[in-house]
Image 1 (tube, rainbow, N blue to C red):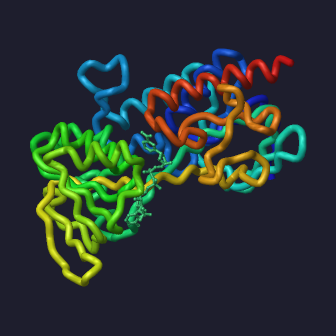
Image 2 (image 1 turned 90 degrees about the vertical axis):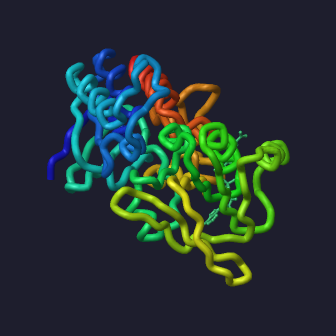
Length: 308
Ligand code: NDP
């Protein structure tokens, strides 16, 4: 099987990975980037992005990612389809196995594998993803102006997203599975004091309802057994995110949720020569522009490390 040695290997094809590849290429690190199963990352699950600086008219999310990819490629990055299936970070250079069975040895490694939003796991939720089902109010809320939407979850994210959506939408339902919110008191108060948010306590979603035009409602079941439908245009999930750090978590320090811990405001991890960028190390901000910026940091840190 093929075995090659590279200076800088980047794992992950989202804004963090592509930006790291842009900077690493310009620093003559000849980076190789494996895009994983979802080239473009989480952004490709949305449509228009209106908050990425530099695009006053908004930009199609898939186009933005394709452009970042081709920019990295034009600057010399070797961008490959495929996933890294296992790593050995005990050896130097690091040893990585690609899903086609080949081995890559890398002097520096940038982990930019991102995070995935948690979904409920309903087939109807999957069917309407991008057609009214979204896990990012900041990305997609704007398309529901003066409409009726629901947010699932009772944590800080759900409260923040419900409050954000309440500023745009006619009405926001919060579907909360218990009779309390998990969110901080301040966030709870904001929600409770917002007139057009209605909390549906003790409710679980049984089905997302819709037709060929997209989401039209949700079927809920209350703890007492009552099943009822609500008419909605958008269904937002806010039940948490899951960082994709399993590949390296046997070596690289993570927090209790699995987010990679980076040191002193840098992209450095506890393993010298391993850097992390983007949502896999960011439980808070989770925006493309932050991911891109942290990809830049990781490439600069890798360059410094390789020069030593
Ligand atoms: P959390 O894990 O805090 O909350 C998840 C919410 O989703 C809970 O209400 C949970 O219910 C609910 N939930 C989970 N699974 C299901 C399910 N299958 N069906 C229905 N409901 C479900 O995640 P967040 O993303 O809200 O927050 C993550 C972290 O980020 C937290 O530490 C939070 O404080 C922080 N954060 C802080 C912000 C801020 O300070 N401005 C903003 C956003 C996040 P239950 O309570 O019953 O488990």
